[in-house]
Image (cartoon, rainbow, N blue to C red; front, side, top):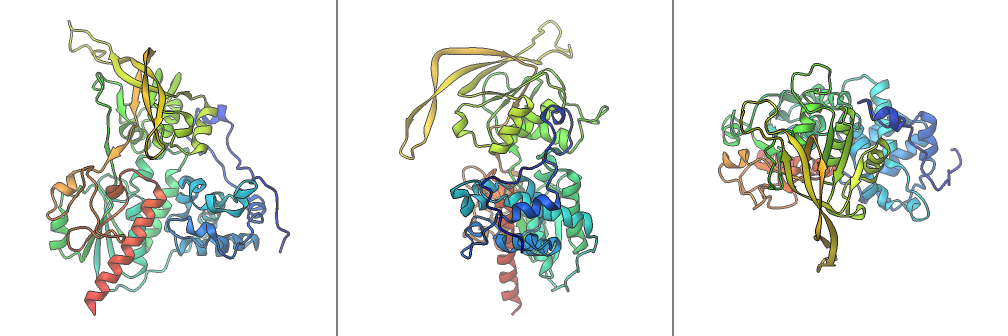
Length: 475
């Protein structure tokens, strides 16, 4: 075996030049070569106690798959990862490894941690490019399970159950499977072809995908159980956008980040003659500081915006987005207005002609500067406004990215399903079991907006619980 690589920094990830990528939707990071992957894998010390595994929500055997890379056994590495993860090519791109597995890496004590996410992406991409052998369909066990939602939690649960011989049907509200992976995350971060390959792999395992079905409207959870499904897993996500409730949010040109990204990602509004309208060009402000806000800001740039601002009421230290996404946004020209909070949106008014197509369009946003107050009992410093510090931004578009809530439709049409005050489905234990018999739930529908990998972890846990429950009944 080659000698260990004790370089303190990660092997750099090749990427497009910022000035070029800010004007296209091609993937920003272009991925490791085989040589780069081996070089980075040799930085792993192969710790016996494997602290990185404890930081992974789906418990991928990280040192084991990295050891395979060191041996140039890339397909063997994929086999190790796929035992724990149904979406390795996705996780390698969008999982926040820096606060999970990589945060536990011993190499991070005196330098940078091993690039676990970069290696996972390499392995998945290598497999997808080189291997076309369809997965083997397990023998059916006689049970049917319905999965509501095709985001990371739903797809993971479906894959885990399919491996165990269940007949699984995934119900999708939109016309394309993938959930937030296709409507929420832009092409330049997660190519849709990657998601489609993961969906196709599930289909090859026997999972049925049914699109254009809105659970709670087209059919209810109660009706699914009456139709012969032995269990239901609800993974409908958190797609209901939040707004600030400030004056002017009803003007044309004010979007939720969900709507803006869905129009661009799923409905391809970035094309020259799109089927769906979207604001292109002008001056854009994105309110919020999470990963979705970064996605919206960088998408607006690629759609031709002249200027894009991130407006966030706390400082850079509190900004919740991944550091990598923040750095990419800065490199591409997004301007960060920190410790700033909107108070009102202005628009063009024409009271003499309400049918004027320009009536009600955004023209600007009034903001106030903030400062961080004294720490509370948890040590968190809340932002407070600075008196007489108002200023106005001239704008053509405002995108609100201040969080989302679970859609209330499923809960309101399902008997015996309890929810909390935020609309999240209440689960009785760590398995995702809800207050309704034979119904489990997980992902953002339970927790509110969270990470892809945490949603996957919930789907994997629920699949295991469903399997144990149904097989115990068979006995």
